[in-house]
Length: 346
Image 1 (cartoon, rainbow, N blue to C red):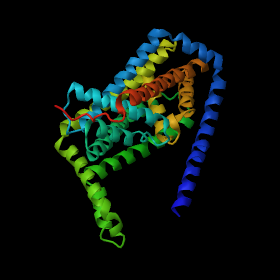
Image 2: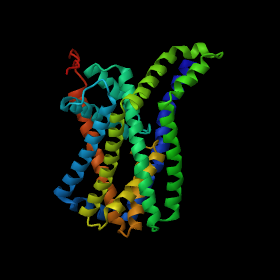
Image 3: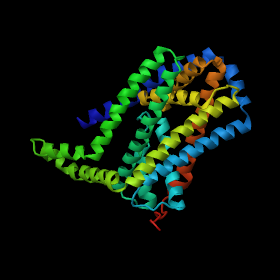
Image 4: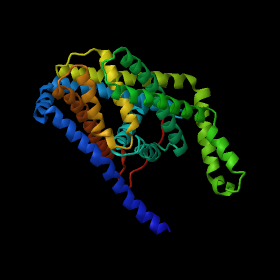
């Protein structure tokens, strides 16, 4: 049976990737055709060195803020420049994997835990708890960001119902899911469920994992109740990171000659993030993200080539980050054979 399962699994994963990627790539090609590929290419080149540098450094700021947010959840580690730099490097590598794997932005999380263990001797349970906390904090901040964005959309009735209606439904579903996720962590619901199941006929099968789940649950609860300053600070920082993403969209559009205000950029970024959340199974939401930029910016009065050019600038910056994270993973974070693991100083 195990052999059959392994063969079936190995056959299913490539098939799933093909079934997911083919329609999304087709959508990307379709949107690119609507916008005139040569005009899009010329616009992207016309953004200039200054424009590329501004967009790049804003996203760098986003990444630094996100890294600090994660580090605040690493309660055993001090908040020092050295440790913030180490967290940033590990996150760079993990996020590069998150962008390319069809796992809802979670494909690189195990890699982060492994790297923190190998390089800095941080126990897996600490890393896992911090990653869950960082992801939850980021999603809580995203809820606030999207809620403001949706209010702005309602105040600017220029977007088609075909875009705003699904966005509203998606936002409502997303808010309920995040509230549920927070409740499960804050009140240790997972531990209580497993404790109840351990008393049933299948109890023997889950007793082995009960201790680990209970331990992680306890760490999450302690962070929310005993590290409130870090928790609130992390949420505020994460919200700031989402605002910086809107600022990045604003400057990318501005350097391409598109006259919009920051609130318009907030609306567009909110729509993009809503759709990305719903298409987590598509690597980097390729095709879908470009389609949202196209629809949103043309609704704001932009010409098709300009609308898609903004999306391509944002996509190019993501590709640069994937490459940078890959280089860091190879040259800095994955020790060669025989290398000693870095101890946990100061």
